Amino acid sequence: MKKLNQRLRKLREKNHYTQKQVANATDISFDAYRGYEYQDVEPNIEYLIKIAEFYDVSVEYILGIQEDSGVSKYFDKGNNTPFPIRLRELRKKARLTQQQMATLINKNMRTYRRYEKGENFPSIEILITLADIFHVTIDDLIGRKAL
Image (cartoon, rainbow, N blue to C red; front, side, top):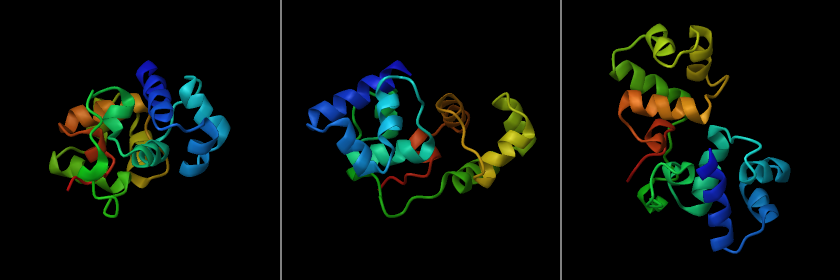
């Protein structure tokens, strides 16, 4: 996720923040945030959302998937659907079983089931795969509603 660390650093420097300021504002530990910029650590969904909302950009922009920052004025900050619920909605709409989903993402059913229960969260790589399966943006997949 080389683009992730580059985008985070670029956003932080453009807005004249220190790593400590971003960490405090997003309620992410300083060590974790620093790890995101130095590619030591991959943020989970919760932290990706916090960072995207802090900078008013889309998750796709942070991950380097899109070049346009997708300013979050296009997102309804107060009306997000939790990821586990959104994942279940998309799966059912696609008429897929949990087992079929597990197979599609090359995980066992227990792991997939934990995603839908909110007991575990997928890696960024799996998020991208899930978004591709459902033909949605990552922001849509993780429940950030567009206005």
